Length: 278
Image (cartoon, rainbow, N blue to C red; front, side, top):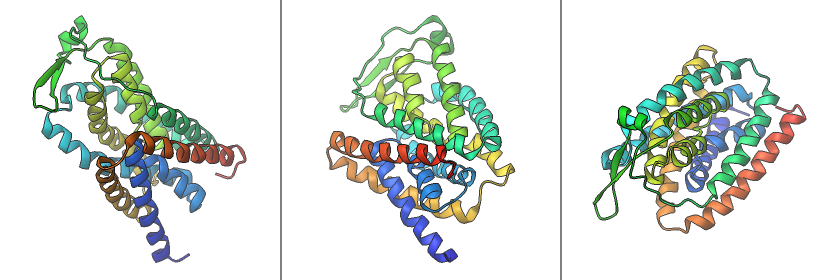
């Protein structure tokens, strides 16, 4: 295959990955790795490096809008980044010495978990009182509703959420994904942050977490411009297109449809990992 053909396939594949990732709510990185490893035969360590770069690009593009609208809790995100960044560096160091088959099987299992979690019924919840530690750290906040009214919310179980964020960061560094599913669980389920704030704060954090682990991959030589550039551009434009389609479509049906696709990808990754083909 020529370099031009490889680049064109990468651009198109990354665009589709960004589109599906945006419509499914799971990010383009989870599609990029099966595309690169199973579809194009790229070593999984280089695929993870490219996926991390695409996570940085998509997070940077979408997070700015949520920050501007005042939905993202910046103070909470920066505090939890201590855990995710530490976890991401540990995950990246483990990934560079772990065999590809192990990463493939773990990636497949994580995909299944994320896919099921994306279908979970989420109800908006607003905690009015914060725990003493949350008050001391000033992690509560407010966000505007559809009418522009500010809704104040509290938070609790700071240490539980902090620990879960460490796991989220480790999975991000190990597998090259944004770990949005794990981050939202930490904030939404454990810390009881409103879902709208959880998802936007998670989006803001993804890029910062990915930068920490990308540095390790860069030092190990797993970030190749020839793979990363078309991946980053394709995923970015795919994500933008997906977010526009999402506004005019039925999100429940789309999530169910793409959850099935992601489940098939996950089983493929597990099969190839167990068979030693990755």
